[in-house]
Length: 191
Ligand SMILES: [Zn+2]
Image (spheres, rainbow, N blue to C red):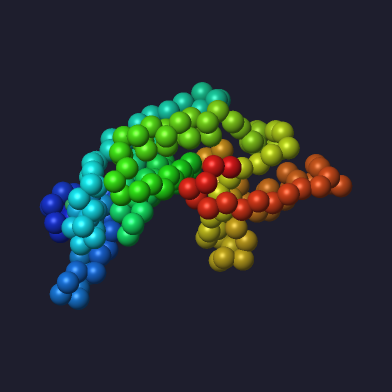
């Protein structure tokens, strides 16, 4: 997907880091998240907000696979969201993590907490993808849109990999008769 120029700073910006923002004259402008945050900080008066661009980092999971995480900071009213995600092409896919902080929090402290959260998640595997079975008795993941199901069935992302609802169902059938508990948590919570 093509990178577009931020209308504020002029930098070529990948699709995952562009935000369409309604400007004062009523039209939409395309800005990078950095310039978006500058605008929000100005309009809300958060002088303590520290705006930085964070470089991607590479981390290894417990099966030796390497994952590159990109970071995005977004000032959302009186909250600051720090997201970490992998990319496929130019779009987020795979592992995805979020921390919610206050606008005047130290970004590097939040980043440190987020990296620890990623490290904890990468140290656990839930599915044996070769045997197509659940390794232990717990599965943690994320609920996503499945293009092929038009919103009727979810796609889940477990261990950073996409698993169809049907495939997850097949894996559960080796535990027929067992009980289960389904807990849903918001993206910033730790499972
Ligand atoms: Zn910009």
